[in-house]
Length: 118
Image 1 (tube, rainbow, N blue to C red):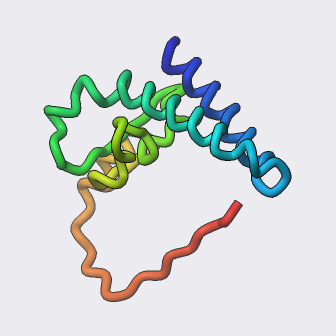
Image 2: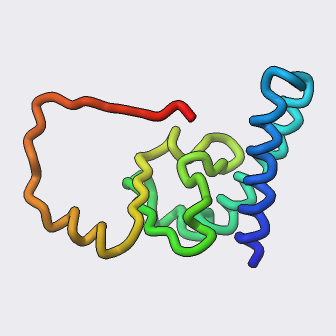
């Protein structure tokens, strides 16, 4: 329940930051600090207890319920964001992860990356 509450508060902060950019630029540093605080609390709850076991290895997350809304790459340990320390992958389910792990490696020579800026 604490994680769910923090996720809701983080989503509220993210929406507030999105609305403030451009119109209320003076509030952006305060909103950013609040979001970073929430990201740090989520890190403390979800990853800090197991961080010594993970080390610097790739983190693969299979979220459940409210964890689908946690931006794991942006979790903040007090000094750095998780993505600054290690690779973070998110998969929608354990079944999808198993399917992907069972596929033979594909030697890609070229890649095309697309993104939606919204």
